[in-house]
Length: 290
Image: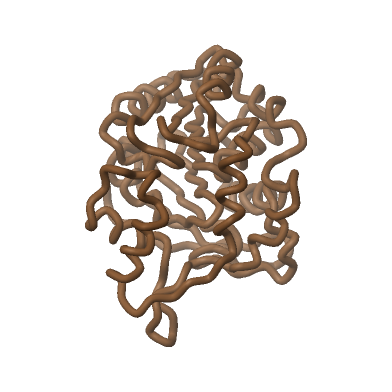
């Protein structure tokens, strides 16, 4: 796959938002990638170059992350606003059909997009999140979101990331942690390595109920007619095995893939996901909705 282009669009409330556009075949619905709470479009670089099967892939920076502008009102850092932002992008690009790929918060946004526009999502990959989120995982995430940190070198940042996430990725090596640090952090004007998001995204997230929509099982049901791959980290504290199984049971074209020895959330670059993702994309192409 050729390299991506950095592109931008405008939200309804006047924010300049960023996405990476990886070129691919225009004859097939593109893949729309939605990152997690503190993450950004860089998370999907490996996916776009590897598993996306030559399709055009669009990886967004949600407001307040990466190269997207920070919101003036921090209370707009909620899923329903992210849906509105993405809908503005879909309208600008005239994308009537797409495959949605969402990790954690991005998976919530993907389900809400499906509910808000029946028929436009022709397939979905929901990564380590569901209509019900485990209390332990929510508490852990609330414990670190919005806590700023700065490091003098990338290696210092990598070691801090490793210390904080050792239980999530117990088999990782220092090169994996360094790559993750470069997805999570950026170099600021003072030459320090800092987190690449607005610390104020934590403000609405601290209010119970703002982490998702009001009826997420209803939102999930909007995907009943299309192929869906539910991915769960075996060690996840966000998506329980029981909820993951209920999700697949509720989806006639659903499949569950569990990534061993990984917590919240799989990176989607794990080899065990290559075949399930290929099946998803093949089935999405064959879907009558495609």
